[in-house]
Length: 156
Image 1 (cartoon, helix red, strand yellow):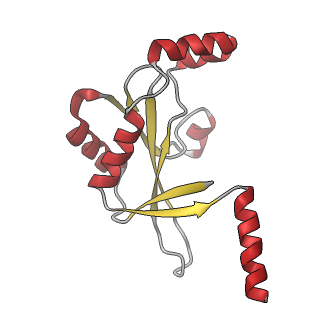
Image 2 (cartoon, one colour; image 1 turned 90 degrees about the horizontal axis):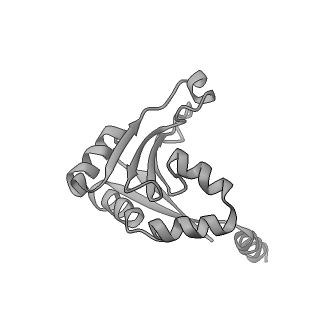
Image 3 (tube, one colour; image 1 turned 120 degrees about the horizontal axis):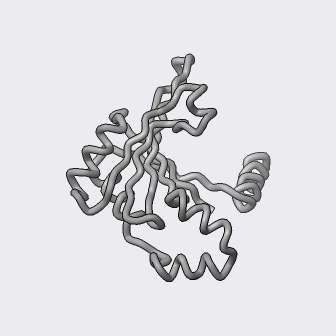
């Protein structure tokens, strides 16, 4: 499995991301901005990172989060990552989705549709309009075997 890591070269703020999304996507979606909460705030449900939720409806929504690393070592440069999450539902729909079982989940997907263009549209808007570097990393069991084969080849 391959994982893409999006690094923002210019260290944008969440307001910069919101501005790009609103300029390019307009009033097509609703936007909700959340700033990073303090440690106490994060414990009671606050955001762990700066994020903006792009909402199409109660079922189709995506969260774009920004996280800047801070290192005390000069050999590790500071960088900002952009994360995309599609696993959020409106609060009431999330409760309903968890309580209605398999058939209920199928009915909810039939009502809202099982796929939406919002996810790719938001990701592509940010990739195309911000200075982003994409790093691809191997993950999962396959990556362990590939790494082991590389180590054996180096030793030989």
